Amino acid sequence: MKILLASSEVHPFSKTGGLADMVGALGKALAAEGHEVFIVTPLYRGIRGRFTELRRVGVRVEVVLGEMLMEGEVWELRPRPGLRVWFVEQQECFDRLGLYGENNADYPDNAVRFTFFSKAVVQIARLLPGGAPDIVHVHDWQAALVPALLRREGHRTGWTPPRSVLTVHNLAYQGRFAQGAFALTNLPGEYFTMDGVEFYGDVNFLKAGIVYADMITTVSPRYAREICTEAYGCGLDDRLRARGDRLAGILNGVDYDEWSTHRNIHLKHPYSFRKMGGKAATKHDLQRELGLPARADVPLFATVTRLADQKGMDILLGALEEMLAKEMQFVLLGSGDPALQRGYQNLARRHPTKVTVRIGYDHALSHRIEAGCDFFLMPSRFEPCGLNQMYSLRYGAIPIVRRTGGLDDSVVDLTEDEERADGIKFTEFTTRALTGAIRKALVLHDTPHLLAQMRKNAMTADFSWSRTTQEYTQVYQRALAG
Ligand code: ADP
Ligand code: GLC
Image 1: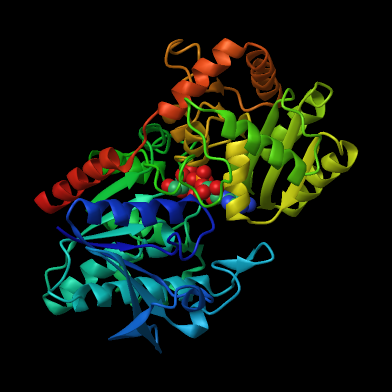
Image 2: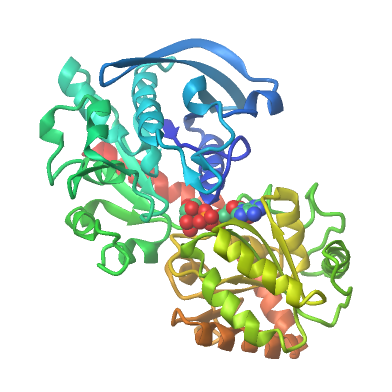
């Protein structure tokens, strides 16, 4: 099949979260299966400097946004056979410090930036060498207008547009803008209704995708069920229920070339479940790097996360206040909500020999933390898939997760299956329930044979992309079948 993936972030070129990892790995995996894959993504500041092999392909886009004309130019990189990444250059829109905003505030013109991007994707779909793709697979709100725009382009010009698939990585981010933004789409008024892109008087990009895509997927089976309920549906559950026969939950895979404990440029001491010495050495180095006492016997808890409401860092702060009286260490790497940043920095000040907080984004350190820690905390309020728990499994760090979304689908608790258990789960979203889970971790840490067994289960659990790719291919086939 010929497949166009459109995403506002793609690892290793741009990333704010798991979306980038997922799309980068999906493109790679589909190409490895023999598909012809194009990934279309914005050319953000700095990409050309870091990837000097980028070349112009001689494709220009001319996008009309309301009355305004915006031009763009396409740059290409071919990371492997069958995969081409097309970067859309548009300096006013994308040559900026951040992807979506700066200093915790969204850019005020995000509707313009991502309507431009979505329209560029539609034009590119018509301009691909060898003809249009079979499938246009778009990700999250930033590209979610594409299915509506494809349909409109078909009606306007008599072109038969490719089938479209929308993947919802996070229903909480919808791309909702005041009604004025509708003019940017140049869609006829009939699209601005309750059954179209209109949402309580505003424009909702993600809703447009949910309404007009041929197939909708999300990133775990449990999240697919959750978003059809009022509690997790973020106001769109009725729309999702209405399209229930077109909605599939597919758990993300892990790129084990990247997230490996024995072939990894970020790890000085390789290890495997048969030879765990390297993990102990990594923990030792990490404790020293973080300014914590380098003690093998003290359990090291960690989290690497966006400090956003979704991630449950508020209940974690409460739980740590209580649990730090015990012999344990904790490290946080993350950034986001200023109040949470302050809360954690304050905690570190009060417990200098037990807690280290690194505010910022550091890819290499995230590998060292996953590898060096004993327990990895993800107490999310909701979690569409979550990648870090799967990374930590492979790295032999026992995940402590709330029973929600992809966390529930990827971790096995002792109470579910004693033999296959590889993590600790809790259910209620409360400090108390999380405290209970951390207590269980401390007991597990003092039970070496059980810990070793769970670590082995964790490190051998397999979330490789071959299964995920197969499921996406089935979704593409369904979209093509009509
Ligand atoms: P989400 O996409 O909701 O943030 P995921 O668990 O799917 O959650 O993916 C998060 C990704 O972002 C992981 O690859 C994680 O390692 C990375 N990440 C998040 N915060 C940081 C940070 N401060 N430094 C380095 N990597 C980070
Ligand atoms: C979103 C979700 C996260 C998921 C990621 C990749 O950022 O918050 O749970 O793992 O997308 O699909």
